[in-house]
Amino acid sequence: MNFKNIKKTSTLLILFFLPVIFLLFLYPSTHNYNALDSVKKDIRETSSFATEDGKTILFEKNITVLGFFGLEPMEKATVALNLKELIYDKFKGFKHFQILILLPNGVEEQVKLLKLELLKYDELKYWHFIYGDQQDIIKVFNSLNTKEILNTDFATNHVFIVDKERNQRGRLDERTEKEKEKNAPVYGLSSYDCIEISEIKNVMSDDLRILFTEYRQKRKGTFNSASRRDDALKVQDDEKN
Image (tube, rainbow, N blue to C red; front, side):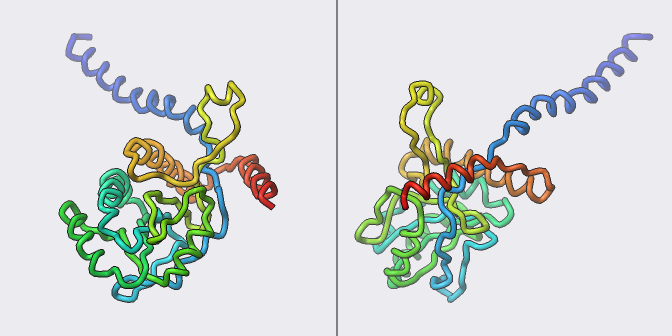
């Protein structure tokens, strides 16, 4: 066998085995896959809200990033830009993904200015601003599991993940490995601060990828949720009651 044939055979072998090796590396991460926790169920639906042109946008059947921009939405320009660059631009191609911002009636003109800032970079096909009564905004916010407080102008820098079944998603145990070794008290993560770039870029982005992976596995019939997560959620609910 001459050198040319040896080189050709070696190239074919490499092309054949590279995908196999890649899959072997992926297998441990798939095998150890854990679903994103449900931290609250039955989040209040947004049926009482509507876009400026009267369209209703719902949580049901969508994977939603939920935000509250309040009476002065232009003051949330930094929040909006961080959210767009670090989350929206990454996930806008995923099926059923949307960003939903709740606002009180009467701030439509301010939202138009905010849209102009965001539209400098891209269209907002999967980003919706919806309007409703102030009391309805409070009701939706109060249906979430969060230690954050909605400001007097009905706004917050934090956003929330709501799945297709109107469950709020997050992490029941956000402790680091060192904290677990020291038996530190358990604390969770139920919202994401859009001012903290590292939190949005790393933590929230990872959590959304986990959630999309879950739904993809459910479609393929390969999803196996750990029952201990539902048990942990039940324990938390029992402690509150």
